[in-house]
Image 1 (cartoon, rainbow, N blue to C red):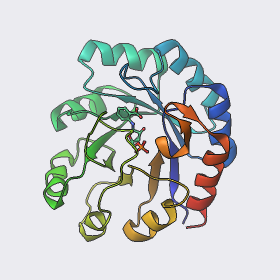
Image 2: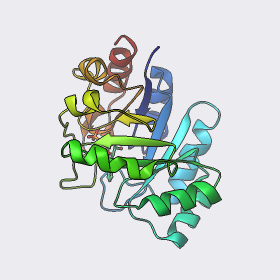
Image 3: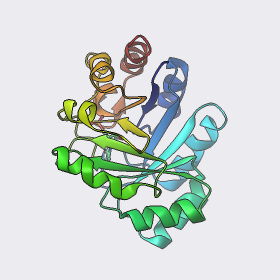
Image 4: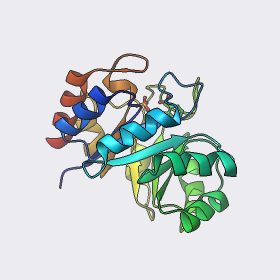
Length: 210
Ligand SMILES: O=C(O)c1ccccc1N[C@@H]1O[C@H](COP(=O)(O)O)[C@@H](O)[C@H]1O
């Protein structure tokens, strides 16, 4: 079975159409002002409307407080909220309980202990997204991590793989880890925050043929 594909950090209609045409199952919109991929809520709402019923839309936030999160969800009504900061299992569970969205928690994988600690999110999230550890930004740094850690781990929560994935390495990443969802952002850009339709198409083709 083909892996699901999330193309993250989209900010224009053209990039949304490119991801859909290439066969992505999910797109991601980053609402985090320090990121070169940040979109304001009006833009996120517009892109979400364009994608509705065609692909699932994830809204990415970093350590948003209750009021900010409510505003974001009300404005965008995403299918998924991707928590990419240090959000606790309790906060994730509350969101999942109260809001009509899937909740995904991104975790930066340093070592096997990170994966053991990820079990704290059992029952609190719909999916974990394993990414490289935070660097300049909490994510979106184009860095991969040691995929063997995922292959060796006994997963009890649905999960996806992110971090430094490109058309050139996504096939190997799927083969090494068995990931059922792969997520990329900077690997399909020509400059930070500027998506490249040809790279999106190449990424999706490589993931599909893995
Ligand atoms: O993309 C960003 O700018 C970003 C900012 C803050 C948190 C996460 C961010 N990106 C997400 O990180 C992963 C991996 O990205 P990459 O492929 O290594 O560039 C992905 O989910 C991005 O959307």
